Length: 235
Image (cartoon, rainbow, N blue to C red; front, side, top):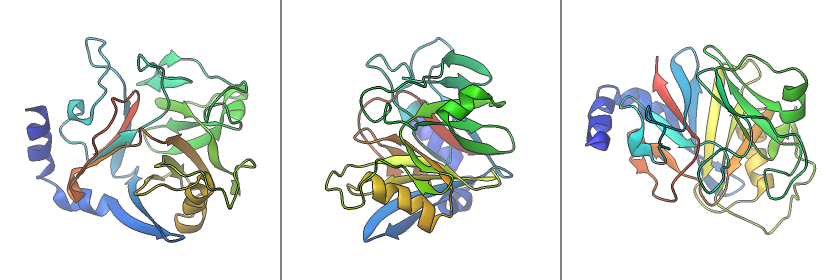
């Protein structure tokens, strides 16, 4: 019933949703990119419902959601691995130390969301001078740092996976959410943001659990239950 209500609500503005997401080919690999203009769209993070239960699925999102995707790494109980802020309340603290896995491949970063602008910030820079973020999620590794590809990425790597991430325009007014439609390398994901989307700072969200909900293009990816979810809706 929730999904039916979401789709019915969405039918009221199909053009906006269809225009938000598009296919992009980069280095012979297909990606889907969904963009949010913060003058027209609101970006929110979602983890739990009013009763404190983890949402875990796109079906639990508000009915006016234009598109959504998983938004950071999480523990088996769906708790965020690093910093998590939702509606001004910090639920998990920032982590700046080296660690295992992709999250610990420093530098990692924070996707910081405000009402009028968004930013991708390297985690240690965030910790040194925390900005005002209405919502924020930490993940890793960074894909781009001030226009440079993460130093540990290998251009001719053979390690591929489905991947998703976020990058923000230099003025903070446009956020691009990208997911690969077939397995890609970290380097390919990073250069997508740099070369195709004109982004200087971009953050990796995840790999095997990567999922996109975009009803305007008929997309509702199945998969594992999620932790943090980022959703875009009209203002």
